[in-house]
Length: 224
Image (cartoon, rainbow, N blue to C red):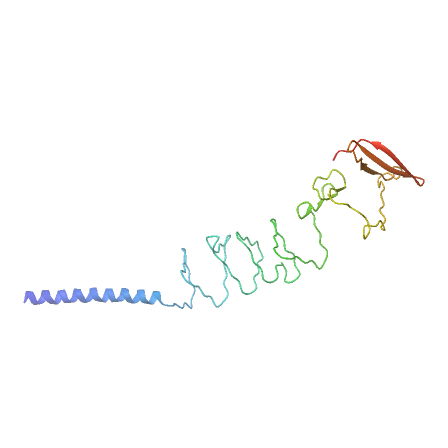
């Protein structure tokens, strides 16, 4: 009688163990399959998605800092319109296939960094630049702090500096058909002057005019 009772107790224990194992396997299988949640999820921890996370409705992210991606190789793709009322910080490249504006199609685009364009840039309206402007390293340089423009140089000791290895002329077809007006805007009694470096390199010649007479004189060349 005692042996039969022990057999029944062992059978009961085995049944409980088998039922527990089957329950674990069932829960694991359900978790691995697609899960649809129609209610809110509240957690004080993290939610991890190791595969694609699809949300068919509005997503609201509240927090002082929201980070998408954890490395420079991660890619965030937005196929619809994207807007923000606060700052958007991008640690890598920002690719925009549509408008990059603040208010639809007519807003401003501002950056504290550098905008690099590998292709052509077209402006259909006025271009206003508040800082210095450099075209092709030294071809044209405008220094706003000194109110000076240089051609072929970025060293501007005078308001207008030309440093070219080739000839510079006014007009078309290398003919002086255009007017070059040289004057002193601050003192009309001084008049305009042209300073030419002598061909021997030993000094300079200054050209000025008075009452239709061209006057030439030798002077020390100004500092470059």
